[in-house]
Amino acid sequence: MNRSDTRAEQVLWPLGFGVLVLVLWEVGVRLFGVSPAILPPPSAIFAAILRSGPTLWEDWVQTVVKGALNGLWMGTLAALILAVIIDRFVFLKRGLLPVANFFAALPIVGLAPIMVMWFGFDWHSKAAVVAVMVFFPMLVNMLGGLAAVDMMQRDLMRTYAASHTQTLLKLRGPAALPFLFNGLKIATSLALIGAIVAEYFGSPIRGMGFRISTEMGRLATDMVWAEIVVSAVTGTALYGIVSAIEKRVTFWHPSQRG
Image 1 (cartoon, rainbow, N blue to C red):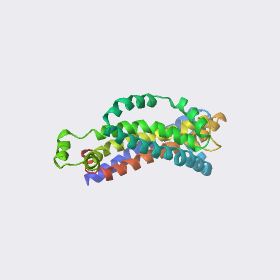
Image 2 (image 1 turned 90 degrees about the vertical axis):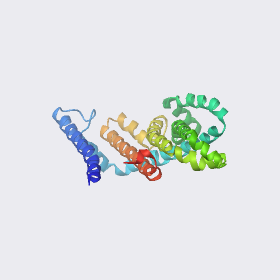
Image 3 (image 1 turned 135 degrees about the horizontal axis):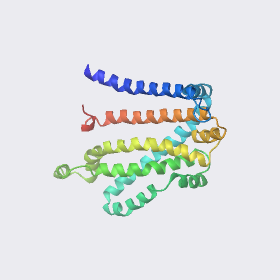
Image 4 (image 1 turned 135 degrees about the vertical axis):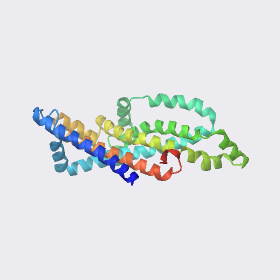
C-alpha cells in the first residue's frame, strides 16, 4: 500500500507542479500584456500543436526517427565494439583515449557544417553528427563498466579456467550493464539535441531544427514552442524507455532494489 502511495505521489507531485507553472505562465502573459512574439501563452502553443499536427509529425520523423535514432544506434554500436577492443589490448587505452577526448571536445557548431558537406543535406549528415556526439560518452561509460569488476571476482573466474571471452560474457559484460544504461540515458538527450542543432546548418524543408529556425525568422513563436514541446516530450519518453529497460535487464543490481 505504501509502495503504491509512493508511486502515486511520484506522478502527482510533478504533474501538479507542471500544471501550476502553466497556469501562472498563462495568467502572467495575459496580465502583463506580453507580446506573443516574445512569449506566447500555453493556450496558443497548444493551439499551434493541434492545427499543425501533420507538420509536427513530419518534422518528428525526419529529426527523431531518421536523424537521432539512427545516429544513436550507430554511435552506440561503434562505442561498444571499440570498448571491447580497447579493454582487450591495454596499450590502446593509452593511445586512443586521449585522441577520443580530443574529438569529444569538438563543438557541434563546427562539426555539423563539415558533416553536411560530407554526407549531404538530408538526415544522413544529422545521423553522423549524432553518432559522433554519443560515441564518446558511451565509450567512456562502457570502459568504466568493464573495469568495475573487483579482483576477487576475476580470480574466481581464473580458478574456473575461464577464457577472456567467457569472462567478458559471463562476468564483466553483465557488470558493465548499469554503466551502459547510464551512458544511454546521456546519449538519448545528446542525440536529440545534436540532430536538432545539426539541422540549422543545412536541411531539407522538414525537420524540427529547420522548422524552429524558419518559424523564428517569421516571429511565429507559437510554432517554435510547439516544436520545443514535442522535443521535450520525446526526450522524456526516450529517457523513460531506457530506464524501463534498465530495470528489466539489471534487476539484480543494488541500484534497482528497494
